[in-house]
Length: 238
Image (cartoon, rainbow, N blue to C red; front, side):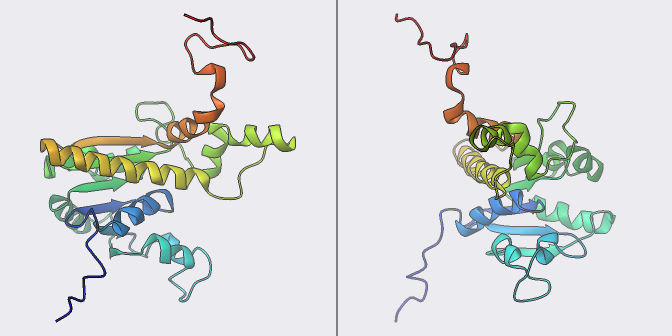
């Protein structure tokens, strides 16, 4: 008898469960990658459904083309996080999870009791990936951080000005997607660390830092060395 699963081998993350506390594109794009690799991703949607469901046309009024991508290979549950009974469900799911991906603002996570310390009390070995626009502990940590804000803050608009003469944003949500890739890689690495050591950890992915690092890979130039090298000069030999 032919094994019907023979042509569809399990992905490398099969057996790992991830609770997805993210919204819009960055977080869902990251967990989409993890789900594609076999992880059991449970997305906590708002009580009225995730906003991606109605962002643009699709085959159903509540299933846009964007949602078809962001929600694929995942399981979803709609919960009102303002209701304690619904929060209890989230905590129960976290207790059975290997990782949590959260992109809510830090103050909202703390208010809901879904910050790292609260989650670690439920699941001591959890991998908790927290991604927001600005670094934790900075004055801006709870400030809004949409894709266009991060594109401007990380230098993309300035790079475009050098080409066209006008500061311009890229015609794609580059910050959301680049940072989503960073989240997926960070979660995978942290799960590997946990596999080897038995210890979970708190992983932070601030968008502005991840995107700035992405830009500076080739645009850091002489500013990378310490002290910086003036433009057009080479450091002395030896």
